[in-house]
Amino acid sequence: MSELTEDTNLTGQSEIEFCEEINDFEDNAPAPRGFAGLLKDAPQGSTAVANGLSQQLIYQINLITPNALVSFDDLNVELGNAAYPFVPPEGKEGLRKAIEARGTKLVVNSAYRTIAQQFLLYNWRGNNSNPVAKPGTSNHQSGLALDINDRSGWLQFLQPQGWQPLAGDPPHVDYKGGGAKDLRQATILAFQVLWNKNNPNDKLTEDGAYGNETGKRLGMSPAVGFEKAPWDDQPRLLRLSRPRMEGSDVAKLQEMLKAAGIDVGVDGEFGPGTDKAVKAFQAQKSLVADGIVGPSTLAAMA
Ligand SMILES: [Zn+2]
Image (cartoon, rainbow, N blue to C red; front, side, top):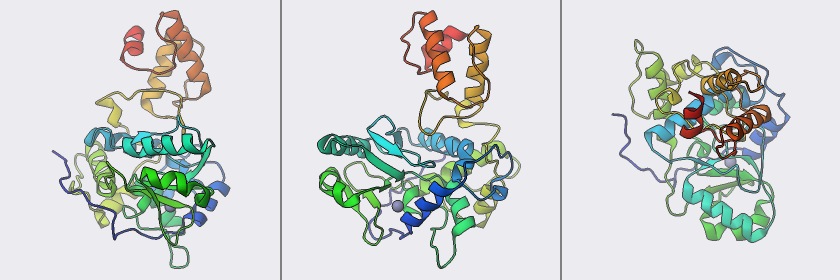
């Protein structure tokens, strides 16, 4: 069993990063183009180059701790290129209320940062003059951090909902309200579990600690994700989302749609074309045409 017993609290152990600079770097980075190599060899650019691996890591965390991270991409938000909009359910509820109270769109440049993304940023940018926290230590690995535009304008709406500013880091807020649980160890553990599943002859200790061995294996991980994906054990709900879902399960869905006579490309990425194809299939089968692929839609395809 891989389970963490210790709940750490962010108090007193916040890492100061230059969030503004990191976000500028991500925003100005060239869009990634199909890189199929190892994480350590990824060309410098946007950390979205590791979207496949990042999605597996987020899903794996939720398999270990159900509902640890939920997406808030359905709220009135604008998201940065490489931002994974994941927070705990209570943190999302706080965001929903704050956005409703202010009545405007919240611009989020960075939210949850997977350990694969942090690995890339640290390798590319981590030096004394440009601090990027070590993989596993960033506040953005906690699942409780956001970098937002116009923080000063948002604070009066966010603070009553448990979202607090981090001094010395102008765009950064952390969720400290009810249900806040620091996921930094869980983030590392999720990687170790995923690595072990794919490398039974080269197992890491599943301890949630980022040591040399774990760091080395992270670099040796495929940027597009592992062959044995966490959704092989427990299918994930597939839908059009930000960032787009990609992986073997999406490719399989596209193949099934095609086999059912629906026109769709098979590229393993759930974009607007796949959304349209799913809705067409659902309508054809008299299912709710919501574009969300759950058990009933999958059953209708079998
Ligand atoms: Zn930040």
